[in-house]
Length: 382
Image (cartoon, rainbow, N blue to C red; front, side):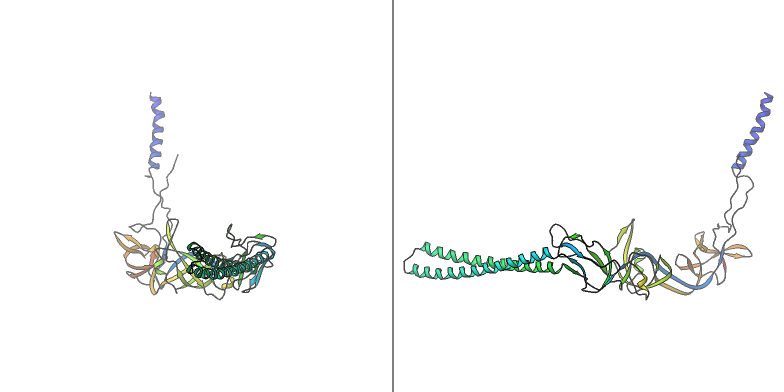
């Protein structure tokens, strides 16, 4: 039994020592870094709304054709500049010309039917007058007079139908001629071809076809009028108004800042990832806007307020203690709590309106209510 106790006592001592060290009751070792500080300085506080957006043309049109058929000419490429009214694409006109010829023939037949209906009405009118005289003289029966009156009503109806058919034939011919003229597809305005959806040899369908909405041929945009469409959080949208100046940074050109102006704000927001945002259109007014291409990612900054000659401290320097707001001021190498009054902040700096003066050194690192940085204890494990 004594031998067993002799072995148990050292083991018990080791367990107690391990618990003592693991519980953190060993000697603490302060490995916290040095206190970080900054000086309160006079300056200007810029309060800005920042949002992401995409560069896009003010007007982009996807061109289709009223005509259908095979593309015989499409000599332009994406990025080419074109003039208003310039022919961009040519289609084989055989199908549309045949359609126009058929429509013209239908119009001629409609005119002939109208002439025939007019002659028939005139003839029925003469017969009705004759039948009336004969009926008054007692030569024919009432039934024969009624038949003559019915005949003239039929003639009037045939005339109205022929007139309607003539109008229909004229519209069909106008549409056929439009389709024929649209076998030469022209640029709707001066601009840049952004994308070609088809090329020479392909067969496209007409926008007038009931089977489809028409084939997309190319898209064109006026890149002289370029903009950024940004999405602004509903928290900030009240501070944005048309006419405000904006600065634009492009991810691919970080060294360059482009000038812009708020043009319009969407009247209705939309939900993006549970957050309501509003589309804001920023017109780019910079002289170097030709460097920008549609689809580029942009960051937009809008200055909503400028506070000049204010006393500024880093936002991290402002802390709370016992329900009050203040800063820790360094005096003789130690932090001292000083209550202050704060004003606006832009998320980086905060305006101090009362409590400290210019040039005062304030603590920016994490610090507790006693003015001490956090300490860590090293623990040992067996």
